[in-house]
Image (cartoon, rainbow, N blue to C red):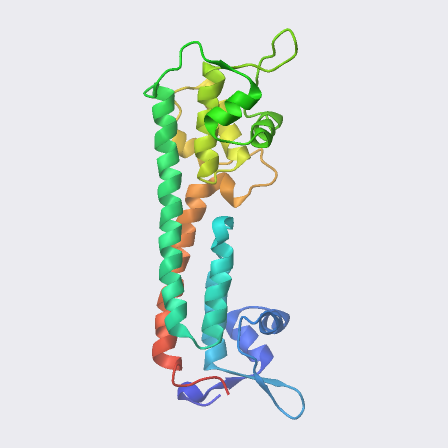
Length: 258
């Protein structure tokens, strides 16, 4: 509809170009993901190149699956800054967002390294260590509720004394250290259980592969069940987001929405 940066589009046209339903365009407007378009006297919305490129950014950003530690919230903030035409701050936030993703990746990889060291027995052995549930929680710097949750989810089985109280030996505490390391890096309980079950059958199994590969029998798979893969996709998407923002800054900054 014309040339250069003066192109305008109806709702149906911009939806067709992007490949989404017109209702999705209206939803993005309601959520503040795109600038509010002007309306003709008959009520029809008129969209510009800004809207077109902004919707492309939204589609890229919303592909990111990882939700932990505010990653999704940051992606939404980037979208809204761009929608307001504040490309400089959107790019700055994207750079911080990429750094955060890389930190999460480092934490995930470091947790695997710690698990390998624990399994090799490189950590200090606490020979004869026998602790109560509270003592174990204090020893591992976790809450009793967290410890109870891990037990209820089958991550660790604890023996009981004759009086019915649980007693945590060196083996259980070492296993709890593995669970703690993986949970601190945001691996899901399902992924950790999958790893522990595999290692009980095959101590030489590749930890990195097992922790990141959901079973075919899993009916529902969360992003943290394949954390390494999800973080990798998040980083790739964030880099594309940044490229899109730089492009928008160069081509649209002097051409705000009508």
